[in-house]
Amino acid sequence: MRRLIAAALLAALPLGAAGQEQGQDQTLADIRQQLTVLYQEIQSLRTELSTTGFPQVDTGAGSVLERVNAMEAELQRLTSKTEELEFRIDRVTREGTNRIGDLEFRLCELEEGCDIGSLGDTPTLGGVDAAENLPEPAEPQDQGPALAVGEQRDFERAQEALANGDFRSAADLFAAHVETYPGGPLSARAHYLRGDALESLGELQEAARSYLTAFSDYPDSEIAPDALYKLGTTLGSLGQTQEACVTLTEVSNRFPASEAALDVGQARAQLACQ
Image (cartoon, rainbow, N blue to C red):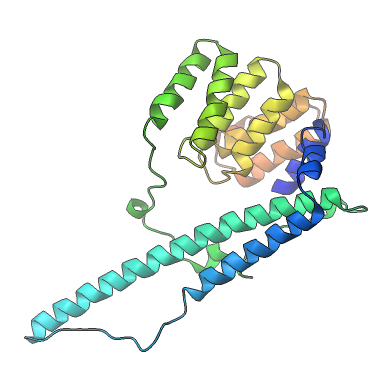
């Protein structure tokens, strides 16, 4: 569904900034090569799960109690190491799957006769759904990436410009933030707030792109429901009523318990969605 929303947005916005530029920068062979590299990377990760020889566990010498303590310590170490590796593979699998989905979309743009709307969901790398097979990490272990030096300060500067109504400066500062701290813990919100600043400037096309990035690149973030909702309303303001209605419906489907879902009904009524 994420790629269908992306296709709707790209249909609404000028292709000179999206499809044509990518077509000039990359050939079909380049994109196919990137796909090959991604599959090779996941295969190399899978080899890390293979054993390297006969396992040796040193339980030490001494009393029975000392040996039991040594075995318990070794068990804890191995359990921690296993969970760390599983989490790493799960993260790389998700990121790689998203990258392949984007490449497939761009391949379809370059190939003649390809119907973007017919693209299905991208199969998870490795052929299995990582979410079904890997245990969820405990809350204390899943802290996310740490803030880089100056990241919070730069983000707050952009927020202050937005709060003061200096929308141009805010948009530029948020854009600089995501370039300086790519993938940082504040990136999803920075894309979203940049969309707010651009929307206030009347630059709805770029605002829609920022909302799309905030949702598609960070679908599990706390800002994702609001980003998807704002993408839908912005598409409606751009006159793309059908795409806007589909996007707003997806807010309710994906995030039924979110505050954004409470506003979907009114937004769909204003657009006269069927």
